[in-house]
Image (cartoon, rainbow, N blue to C red):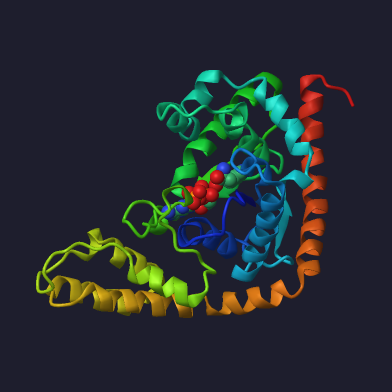
Length: 321
Ligand code: ADP
Ligand code: TRP
């Protein structure tokens, strides 16, 4: 069983990325053979500054290692270090119906807003399919918003296999239902695009301030409130033990509390939850050579697998090397 996932280096990671995706990577690394990569080719559709992309790519790798990815357990690499994936993308592109890509949300949303989309954004799901298929991946841990892209990958693989024989392995998405949609500071889905994120490694003081500014409703303190529909409670639940979650749910139902107290609890809980990761990150920052070595070793392993799969696909289509 092989697990694979990619994450774009388009900004520093936030709680939504962690609970929706990264936490699963870390949990799965001990049980399965796993490949994780920094999707810098995908990030090219939004970042056009070379220094920024380089820095964010390295930061993303450092963050993943600090959060608990272990190079002995998981293969960590940068997407563009495996050029076989780009070659495979073209093979897949020739069999991908336009209609399939027109339905994909990233492109559709841009088009609906009247924003000009480039061909990179339009064909983004094909590159993602190549990422997945190039490593014979069985399981792809992601947040809810990526499930559509994995369906597209399955459609592309099915059609390719139909034409050329059993070349690709069918992957399945793996979504953690409990944290499939982490809310942001405004109660909407936490996302860089909505400017409502709380970054994992934000220095503690500004992070605390940000938590204290999470939007809440203006109902009187004494009112009883439903915890399940409250985004502050949902955020606290991500960090809290079962007992604390029950206790706070009780406080909501009884009423007579201030949101400020819950926010303080949230800030404390987040600080202690990520304290080991923060310490590891500080150490890694002192040793950028280590991160580079991990990525080069990862790229070597990933290329070995991807070139085997590309070879299979090339032979199947009649491209003779
Ligand atoms: P963003 O929306 O901030 O640009 P990305 O699209 O780069 O984040 O997401 C990277 C990974 O994190 C994906 O697997 C995505 O599903 C997951 N993810 C992002 N935001 C959330 C969220 N609010 N809740 C759950 N998972 C999320
Ligand atoms: N598109 C994904 C995102 O925005 C990142 C990604 C690229 C990915 N290739 C992938 C995720 C392959 C899983 C598998 O989050």
